[in-house]
Image (cartoon, rainbow, N blue to C red; front, top):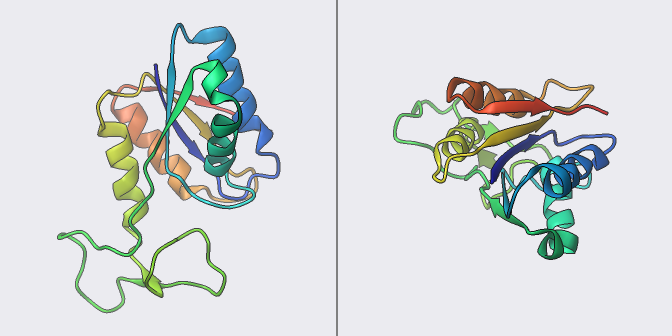
Length: 157
């Protein structure tokens, strides 16, 4: 079973993500589980919590990860070429890892589309948006998954 995970960067309780994955692995999946996520780092990131949990106990639960980080440094061929397209990273920005001091705002949506389209196709998606933030990336990925006919389970604290 392939599970697509899109989770907020500022979750007050990342345990909602790991609890959903544990429930899926122990009670729902009939075999190995591959968790495809955006690999967004950070102490309050749902992606990071999932990655840490999979490394800690995934081997005995049959859970593997398929991290797909966004390439924040690169623009796509169809990105605007005007100087205002790229965004300047704020001091201490960990949400847009890369070597450059600027990032392409289209990198996250491109990565989300790639996660939805990658084969084997996700069987379902777990979405864990930030309860107090816009969660643009999580909502974008959930919209793309629904458009592709993938069932979306939204978990909230």
